[in-house]
Image 1: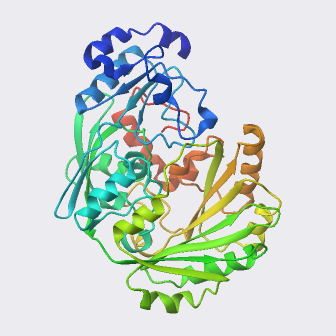
Image 2 (image 1 turned 180 degrees about the horizontal axis):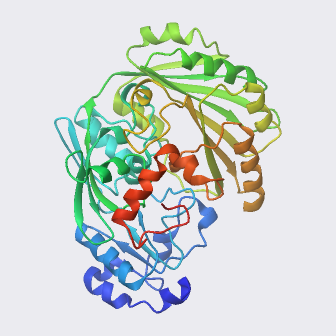
Image 3 (image 1 turned 90 degrees about the horizontal axis):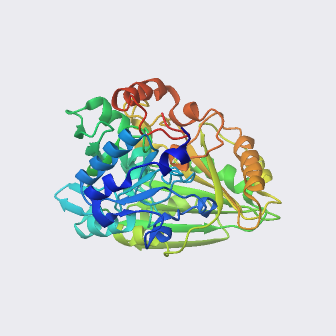
Length: 438
C-alpha cells in the first residue's frame, strides 16, 4: 500500500480520542502555521496530522498509533531539520514544542525535548550555570543534542551531548525508558551523537552544567580577496590555540569572496589580546560579556525561515585557502562556516559516544541559498562546494544533506555498525524509518 493511500485510510478518530484537539489535521485551524518548516524549500510538504504533545503519554499514544497504522512518524522540536525529515509527507508529526520546561538545580538542568535554545540559555544562565549548545535561538535542544551539539564553548567544555546525564525516551514499542550510564547504557551511548529520530522519541534531557564563566567575544573583519590567506592563517592559529579559545571562520560567496573571523574566549580580555595579535585583521572588535549576554549575542534576532540547501564536511587536515576561496569566488548567496574543533572535543575517544569526529580540526557548514535559483541548481552548486573541499567522506548529521554521498559512513564513521545494532534492538520494525535513518 502506498504512503498516501495508507494515510487516507488511517483511523485518525482513534488517536483524537486520546489527544483531543491537540491532534491537528489538514482541515483544522492552524494546520498550515504549524506545518511550515524552517527550510521553506519543503513548505509544500503536507503531513497527514500534527500531534501537539504535552506529556510522555501523548508521545506513547502517537508511536503506538503509527506502529499499528503503519504510517510514517517523526519527532519535531525546533523545525530546523535541514532536509525537513521532521515533517514526513502523509505522516504523523510528533510536535514536542509544548514540552519545553527548563528546571535548573545545582549543576543539573532538566530540559524538555521541545525547548528552543534561547529559553534554555535564559533559564540556565539565570541560575549562574552554563551549558555548551548551539547558537540559533529557535533550534530545538532535542535534535541538537542527539546529533552531538557544536558550541561556541566547545573547545573548553565539549559537545552538548558530552554533558548529557540521562534522557527519558519513548521507544517504538511504546515504553518510556530512562537511558543513562547505568540504565539502557547502549541506548545512552547511541543518543550522544547518533542522530535524531533513530531510536525513539526523547521527551526530556538531564544535563550536567558548569558554573557560568566570564567571556570575551571578538570579531575580526577582512577585505574581499583575503579569503585564501585568512583561511590558511586561521587554520594554523587554531591548531596552536588554548582550549579557552573557540573561533569560526566564515567565507562569504561574492564575485570576490571575503572572510570574517569571530569567536569566544573563556576568560578576561587581557589574556585574549596577545592571542588576537597573532591573527591581524583590518578591523577588530572585542567585548567583555557574561555567559548569558554571549548566548543572546549569538542567538541573533528572530525571523522567518528561508529557502536554502546545506551540507557539511569535517576537516581532519589542513585545507588550502586557495581551494576554499576558489569555491566561493564568483558565487552568489552562499557561505562556508568553519567552526574550530580540538580541545575538550578531542579528548573523548571516538567510540566513547556515538559522535565519531573527535579528531576533526574543524567542521565546515555549507549554505547555498535557493531564493533566487531553483532547488536543483542550488544543490548542484552545493555538491560542487562540498566535494571540492577535499575533506574526505565525512559530514555532521545535524547539518543533514539528503544528497550526501554514502551518508551512513559520512555521519557515523566507525560507529555505524554499533549504531545499527542499537537501532535494530529498539526499533526492529522500523517504525521510525526515514530516508537517512539507521
